[in-house]
Length: 212
Image 1 (tube, rainbow, N blue to C red):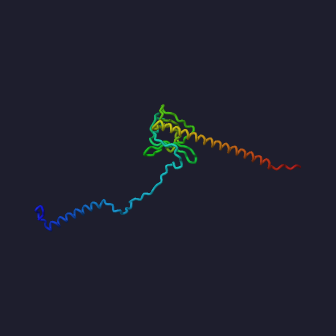
Image 2 (cartoon, helix red, strand yellow):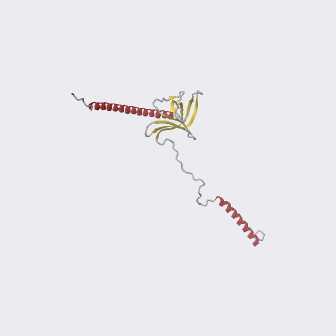
């Protein structure tokens, strides 16, 4: 006799054990669907690594700041937002030319790409100490265009830093241009001297006429 007065027979005990085994098997089967066996699983599609060039590999970063860029629409006679992102001043390692490059956030689309030239003049926009306006021959759309840009930096300090690095790049470019001019003048002088020497040699090597 059991404690609750119900008699447990061998038949009932076997039935209870069978039900418990069935429940354990079902639980184990359900768990087995999600269980990690540790066996290696081959990927369905094999992806190969692709190297993406940013075009900035041969340049030093002189400046890197968050900014908002505007372009003046000549037809509509109004400023239009060009993009929000990082503006960079990049100096080429070999040619030492400096360019301004700005990409939009997320899409990384280029919204400004032009050389920093000595002739470029930064001007405050509407008296704001956070914004600068300048003209440039831009190549961001794949073709050269004369654009009027306005950039707004996040703080007065960043705006001054942008101006300082921009003007330093202009000075270095101007010095480089002077060096090129001097080298060209030296080459011209050298060629002129060589021509004079060649003429003198030709005059000296002319055979005198025989006297009768």
